[in-house]
Length: 295
Image (cartoon, rainbow, N blue to C red; front, side, top):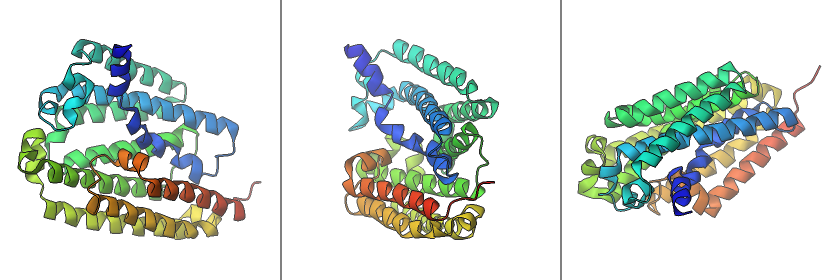
C-alpha cells in the first residue's frame, strides 16, 4: 500500500488542474451540453493526465539528485527513496504507452497531439529545461497542445485567438514560477536549476508585466472581435472577471509569496476558485443569451 501511495504521489494528481486547458474548446465551442462531446472531452482530459504523469515521473527520475538538495522537492517519492527508480520507470512507460493507445480511440489528430506532447516534454526533461527562455516556452507549448487536443477530440475547429491566449497565460504562469523559485532558493537557485542563474528578479518582473498585459489585451480582443464573439456579443462581460483573476494571481505572487506551483494557488486560494467558477458561469451565460443559430 505504501508503494501504491508513493506511485500515486509521484503522478502529481494536484497538477492535473493544468489539464483543464483541454476543456477550453468544449466551453468556447458551446458544446458543454452535448453528452457525446462531454464524454470525449472528459476522456481527453484523463488521457492528458496519464501523459503528464509519465512526464512528471521521467523528470523526477532525472532530477532525483538535485531534488534531494531542494528544501521541498526532497520529499518527492523518488528523491526521498519511497519510490524505487526501477518501479518509477515501469510506471512511466506504462502511462506513456497507455495514453498513446487511449488517444487513438479519439482519433488520429488527438493521438498526434499526445505524441507531440510526450516527445516535446521528454526533450524538456532531458535538455530543453537547461536553456534559458526555451524552458518556459516549452512548458507553455504543452498548454497549447492541451488546448488543441481538446478541440480535436470533439472535432471542432480551434480558434487561433484561444491558442494565443493559452500561450500567453501559460508563459505568464511559467515565468511567475521561475520568479518564486529564485525568491525561495536565493543564492542557491543555480544549484537546483541551472537556468535560474540566467534569470533575475528584475528581468522576470519585466516579462511578467509584459505577459499579463498581453494576456488581457489578447483575451479582450478575442471576446469582442473574434468570430466566436460576433456570434456571442455578450462574451465581453467575461473580461472584468479575467482581469480580476490575473490581478488576484499577481497579488498571491507578490504579496503572499506564492507562484512556485500555480496549481497549488488554485487549490489553496478560495479567491481564485471563486473567480474560476464565476468565469465559467459568465461564459455559459454569455452563450445562453446570444446562442449560435442552428440550421
